[in-house]
Image (tube, rainbow, N blue to C red):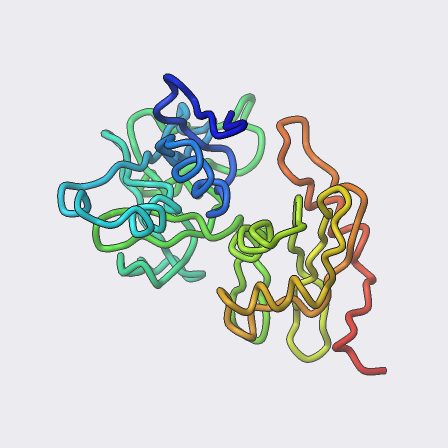
Length: 259
């Protein structure tokens, strides 16, 4: 690690997968430690790699900041993998980097079913596997996970990415960890609640965090409330356990809800 101006002597690149890496983390690797980040994505059901990030020739001369912005995406499909995004009716959506929908994959080493037939059929009639992720794909084929389908916040007909909200929040000075969950709202169906763990000794406030989020997010994407916790629950693999958070805050009353 960097200490007293020192940097890694031999480490040149690192692969990040399992969860979408926040911009602040990628910037630290690239700018502080001169370590190139390779974003990747996959699933056990895919054996396991699905996409990996690498620059195309057209991107070589981009500035470092532009390259970092591009590296936030999980990359392009590896050899043998097809992918597409569809809406709630199964209609295929365009690869424009804006439309987002359910991510489906297909390939010779994608699972055809689960042990002892557990659960529903893994593949549809055209052999597409529903990953359970919500994503965008741009014109160059770069895929970006915007959320898990069960974690996306559906507010007033719009979808708010909990991942995008969290990844911006952890870049705020004084924030060690953050989780965004949907809370019921009588007018908007759901609204975001942001749960935050502070850095040790930090005096960061709700106002500080909201103001920081305003720089990157639209007004309708901002959380209706911020709550501070000593710690967040995690799975055995280190991911935030949102099922527990949703259960704990299912009756939470947002300050935007009038009696």
